[in-house]
Image (cartoon, rainbow, N blue to C red):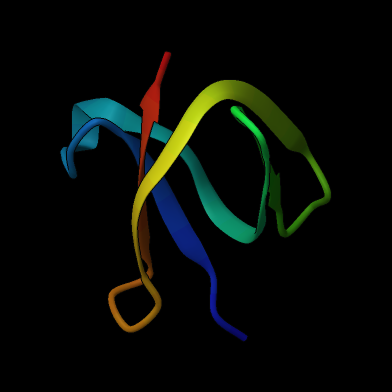
Length: 62
Protein backbone atom coordinates (compact mmCIF):
# COMPACT_ATOMS: atom_id res chain seq x y z
CA UNK A 1 0.00 0.00 0.00
CA UNK A 2 1.33 3.42 -0.94
CA UNK A 3 0.50 6.26 1.40
CA UNK A 4 1.56 9.86 0.83
CA UNK A 5 2.08 13.11 2.65
CA UNK A 6 0.47 16.07 0.90
CA UNK A 7 2.12 19.49 1.12
CA UNK A 8 0.98 23.03 0.30
CA UNK A 9 3.20 24.74 -2.35
CA UNK A 10 6.49 22.96 -1.51
CA UNK A 11 7.80 20.00 0.46
CA UNK A 12 8.48 21.32 3.93
CA UNK A 13 7.40 20.14 7.40
CA UNK A 14 5.61 23.49 7.90
CA UNK A 15 3.49 22.92 4.77
CA UNK A 16 1.95 19.54 5.57
CA UNK A 17 -1.78 19.41 4.81
CA UNK A 18 -2.34 15.71 5.54
CA UNK A 19 -0.31 12.56 6.19
CA UNK A 20 -1.12 8.93 5.33
CA UNK A 21 -3.18 9.95 2.29
CA UNK A 22 -4.54 6.97 0.41
CA UNK A 23 -6.55 8.78 -2.30
CA UNK A 24 -6.38 12.13 -4.06
CA UNK A 25 -9.43 13.05 -6.12
CA UNK A 26 -9.41 16.07 -8.43
CA UNK A 27 -12.57 17.52 -9.94
CA UNK A 28 -12.03 20.85 -11.63
CA UNK A 29 -10.34 23.03 -9.01
CA UNK A 30 -11.54 20.89 -6.07
CA UNK A 31 -9.10 18.44 -4.48
CA UNK A 32 -10.29 15.88 -1.94
CA UNK A 33 -7.71 14.07 0.16
CA UNK A 34 -8.66 10.92 2.09
CA UNK A 35 -6.36 9.37 4.67
CA UNK A 36 -6.01 5.84 6.00
CA UNK A 37 -8.70 6.47 8.65
CA UNK A 38 -11.14 7.79 5.97
CA UNK A 39 -10.82 11.40 7.20
CA UNK A 40 -11.18 13.90 4.37
CA UNK A 41 -9.82 17.34 3.59
CA UNK A 42 -11.25 19.27 0.65
CA UNK A 43 -9.56 22.34 -0.78
CA UNK A 44 -9.60 24.52 -3.88
CA UNK A 45 -6.49 24.41 -6.02
CA UNK A 46 -4.56 22.12 -8.30
CA UNK A 47 -2.27 19.14 -7.99
CA UNK A 48 1.25 20.31 -8.85
CA UNK A 49 3.20 17.08 -8.41
CA UNK A 50 2.74 13.55 -7.08
CA UNK A 51 5.67 11.20 -6.54
CA UNK A 52 4.49 7.69 -5.84
CA UNK A 53 8.01 6.43 -5.11
CA UNK A 54 8.69 9.21 -2.60
CA UNK A 55 5.21 9.14 -1.10
CA UNK A 56 4.69 12.88 -1.56
CA UNK A 57 2.26 15.19 -3.34
CA UNK A 58 2.26 18.96 -3.68
CA UNK A 59 -0.85 21.07 -4.21
CA UNK A 60 -1.23 24.76 -4.93
CA UNK A 61 -4.29 26.36 -3.36
CA UNK A 62 -6.25 29.04 -5.16
